Image (cartoon, rainbow, N blue to C red; front, side, top):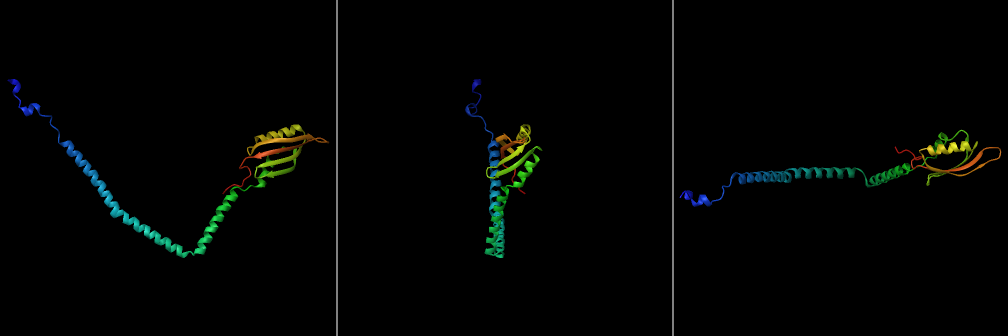
Length: 185
């Protein structure tokens, strides 16, 4: 009869559950809820009125300032600012022809002379006509164009030997976008 020493409730009863886990979870969620509720109440009744008061103060200051400046002065100021913005845009795209002259002066061979310079700023093209002492000097000048960072590409339109010695030539230079623009300040 040793097998019947335990009672029926002990023999078929389930495992004991720990009560502490449920209680701890309830306390944790209650604390989180309390913090959230406290934050909401603090923001709604404490911080929101402060912000609303600051906004109304700033609105009042803006109204006071707008009354100090007449409507005509405000229109004139807006027009002036618009003109400044337009002027800045124009100057940032302004082409300075003197930069082309300085660029050619720095990069022209001593035995090459220009007789005509045509410049189209919209296409950034410069058409140069001139004379060189001989074809070797003309080739040196073409190499100088090739090495110029301000020149994107170029091509020799025509060349011919002229009476009395020398070579007459025509070259087209295609300049880089910022090669002769005014510097923005």
